[in-house]
Image (cartoon, rainbow, N blue to C red; front, side):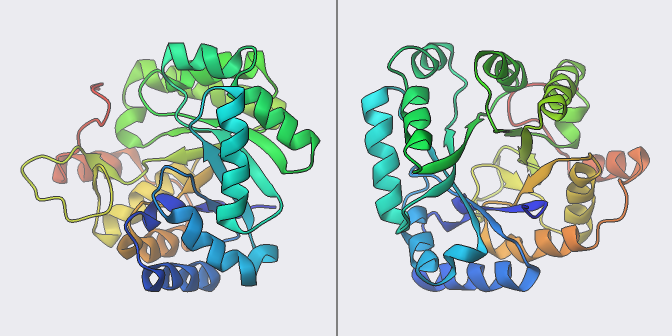
Length: 276
């Protein structure tokens, strides 16, 4: 069983061991038992590996592979095992699979998916998932689920994206498919306010996040208002406690009027070039 909130290991990009230990304390305090990382998150796997020496039994551990061919993905999975200091990963995910050419390579003969399946057969991983970004990713995830019986999907979702009819329809369709197949749905970018603009980049996120507790509450509660989904936390350690505090107080989804007011106050905009 996984907690509804998942620690997003991207928060450990450019982090020190001291930062990592502070994040671990927050996770243990809030009872979060699911960690999601990736080789692309700089030293995140290495920092989490230090946790695993003491806390492996406490966490469902997920990582990813950005490699698209069998050989490269196979090598990458073994490298992640070494960096994480474990002999088995609970979930391996094909990372950021949204480009059509890369999709065909990874899902085709001698592609990364074959390496993931082989790793599962050898007991090196338990489950296989797929992740991606962008406004076409929900449709691509539907296609992927028709090709292979994935155990999980990961994609962006927030109120701004919900307002786009095209994305909302595709998103709701892939969520329905996942519910029918008992596939876990993991959601990212819940706190996205918009791209960095004239504001200085003062957070460890590639987008500008919401920062006030009231706004974080609404954004988190909006996502958790969906049934049977998992929320990946924000990629900034200093906001981690706020996100988990908000999740701990969830009771119901905010009213549309409250979400509209939050969007207007914060001048929220799309990350992926889609409007409402």
